[in-house]
Image (cartoon, rainbow, N blue to C red):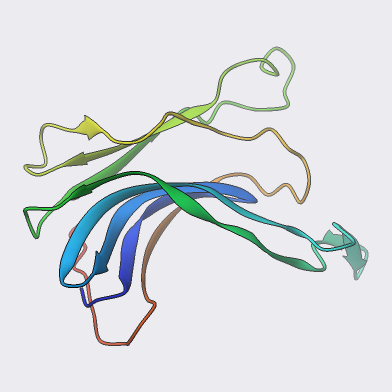
Amino acid sequence: MKDGDRAGVSMFRDDSAYIGIHKHAEEAKLVYVGNVKVGPLNVPVGYVNGRPVALDWQCVSNGSIKSERSLASDRVWLRIKVGLRAAHADGHENDARNATFEYSFDGTTFTQFGLVYLLTRSTMGYIGYRFGLFNFATEALGGQIRVDY
């Protein structure tokens, strides 16, 4: 990774969080970022060819770092454990739906990092939660990560 690069894994939809690595000034830090949000400007849903679509969504918040620590290793395992029970099915409306973000330096012993993330039950622009794997540059192109599995 190069300075300004970001990489990690996320649980994302209109309200998202991730665990990842931020590189700045030649230092890599493990971070947990929460409160990443996208939302509609004016009209949450419109119709194209008779189907509902999100029309004018944009980034509302880039989120903020909730936990961070320096990385002493250039190899780290990242993991998300999540309960994806039905959010709007009979008998499950009040079930807790949480995700925990974890890391490991040996691939065997994992440590929870950051807060327990409560998955939203919002139906605005509802698509459902997805897992994401990402790597992007904020300063200059040229950095890279290796993902084994």
